[in-house]
Length: 428
Ligand code: S3P
Image 1: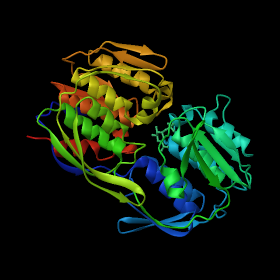
Image 2: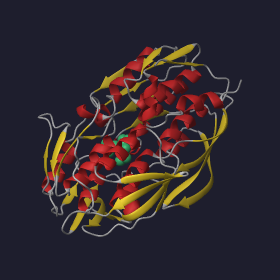
Image 3: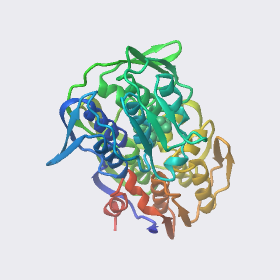
């Protein structure tokens, strides 16, 4: 489906964004491993968490909607059943990587796979540590899915120094650690999102080697009430839209403000953005609040690498669009992992920005452009990647004429109501 977006006169209103994708996956998996019934409120109703839910059903977990809560009948650490079919993770990297951590500790074999995009993404990053823990995992010769996982119980506890920044890999090891005979420790240089740690009640400590978190194998997980906040990575598209479209003022309610996710707000504020946080509170172990955003002419010339890239990993597409449309130059380096996301995001961003008339230099691990005013509307390809579709959809709000986003339905992965929500915010 093509989606046309035209220049906006301003965005106004109070909205909510769908539930946090990372927290939704984790709530489903951890509730499945708990001893008894948990309830999840605010679960993201989109294709990615549905993949997790479907895989867990195949492993014997029952779900039931009770009003706005999803009730999950957890079967305890030892209660999953051997799957009778291939587990389908769809487009979801979080599903395949985190679930592999759980499957590694099962006394049965399973196969997990996904769509074409997912089967092109690197899995060696989880195969290596999970194999070290004693599971046998076979992927394709390129180290991609389908993954055949011969689980073992108990697994061997390991101490793992993360060679890359990845919350998915960290979480896969921590979840596998629940099935290990002892203490598993993961150490990372940059703290990546810590939702798994919060849900399992684990604490991160700082040492000379980095940020270290430990999990004890065999400990029972108590069922509970999960409250999923609005996804700040989804809110980022609306925040950016409000910043770049003049005469905008929007309030986004109940957004997750976990400090491992809020770098985007500090980043925009460092360029002068008017973003305030209202009604901040802690709900179910995660900070949440409302974001009030006013249109702002952003100023600066930005260089992003290292820690900043890791902390802004899902926001790079929308940051690129926002800065390009604001006439702010940008250089991104040390971001090779962007090539291994739902699309090759370096190639997708560069191709679409060039379509808009920007001179962009592409590197193996990033890209750069100089500040330029007056970009042109164009046809932009989503490359089947939800964050690319939404980022260039936002661009269309600030460009004169009609911008077309090809294959725009891929927003269903994380934000099915995105296009409608943009419409409801329009000033007419
Ligand atoms: C996620 C971690 C990040 C992020 C992805 C969700 C998670 O991936 O890009 O959208 O929920 O743990 P990496 O671990 O590959 O950086």
